[in-house]
Image (cartoon, rainbow, N blue to C red; front, side, top):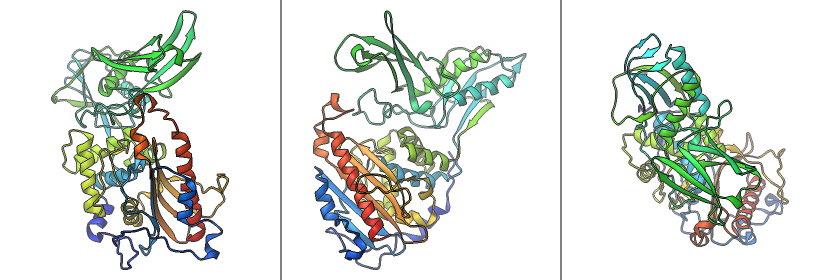
Length: 496
């Protein structure tokens, strides 16, 4: 995979860390919280940070920092060097890591290659579906690829139908500690489809339940054979998963279904899933081919079809908006490989991003076990993240990709007409909440901030059957988010 460096990379090499001449600047060591006392006329009656933290009544730990982008001055901080799980806020670092290694115009490519000539509509050789790790490939795009094959005159493949997914390592699950049924924790490979999820739908029938498992997109929704569902009579657990004969075998408790519904389930064999769906779509185009087989090595061949992804910058914008874990892991792995790494798993690639952040951003305490933030063993401090956001700010590549976060009033209502704008990334795990990004008024002072909250003890006590909805989790998260918005409102009125 070819590396496409950007000016962002060169700036980090030449500029180093943000200049910090004052003792309260980002480069200075901080052994205690720095909380400047605002003038009464600045604060607008908003409580000081210590009061806000106390009023939030959050169990666990809270840490935050906010700094002026122009001067590097640390404006307010509370335990800024404390490393906590960043959750999906880690994706903002992953975005910078990927932009640095691949460049904003990088595209993933999914190709069809043939090992023989086409004679009278018959491909005299093998057909190979080759992936590069595109995390955004969907069923509709596979339909376009099948149409390209038909447009080239192919109606039959005489040889084998092969698939190759070796561009990225095979990852069985992003975080093995998650419940088996959560759609945000699928497997990963060099061929990914529909964020590696299968659509499970059920409807009560006269003799039980009618269920479907399909690869749903906007235009196409072919049923799949790589995953199967069985409705069983039991109270718990709601779902079970097992791998049998190369098939994802699921069961679901009958009493949990109701009259009808649907949800996305994770796919554990994404490359086979992708190949099977392509075969189905090709058959709909009148193209006969054998069942898919994995290609272990490489094949001498010529290209007969291709689908390119959107540019990386656009992919990252979607990743940061919708917090897609598969996208984060795929672009993170691709970045590590582009920088010369050979990661065998997410932990090795996360370590490569850790080393990159230490070298480029001076983040000596950061630690990543993946690129999505789903693994709770990752650690990041508000100070190190704020420093990273400040270093990246002049290049302007990250900020336009972040999501607009409206300021909220004391009742929690969005203040959409407020002149101060916030662009940020949220992060949520059970008993973990994070928010980080930029805040400022157009034409006025611009700042970078990071807010982390975590109750790691309560998180560690969650039983496996409670993982999707732990007791007290929703109330804790509500208080954490209220604290975030009160801090943002304070900073908007005090500093912006």
